[in-house]
Amino acid sequence: MTKIIFIAALIISSIAQGETKVQWPDLSIIKYVADRPATETDINEGAAVFLLQSEGVNIGVPMNIQIPQYAIHTDGETNTKSNVVVIQAEQTDDQQVIGALIVGTNEFMAGLSHEFELLGQTNPEF
Image 1 (cartoon, rainbow, N blue to C red):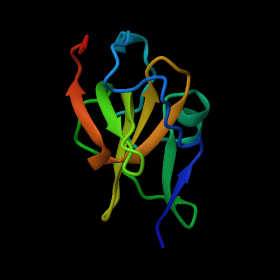
Image 2: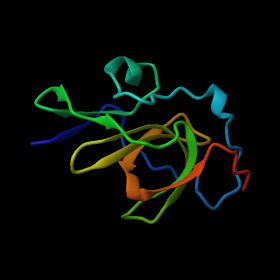
Image 3: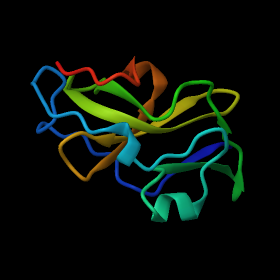
């Protein structure tokens, strides 16, 4: 059985709603993990949000997307939109999970890839 271990809480913040004008951060100051699976050290350093594991063994492989990059996350239950910076993206045979930093907070969140509108690495300046 495949398990997703979320070290940081799944947090959706109404402070950073996707429809509100916000100050997007410069990507050069954002910690992230790309081109490899995240480690516990990455999580402890704020560069990753989760580990994909099965029976204690990492099973996640990096998704083929730009990291870091700007995005809007839409919560599937509440339809709440949050401006985020994608800092991690991994997949298994049956799921794609993205970890992100919520803009305007120091909070992290994770969700399934279909919940994210990827905006690229150019500052969106909504």
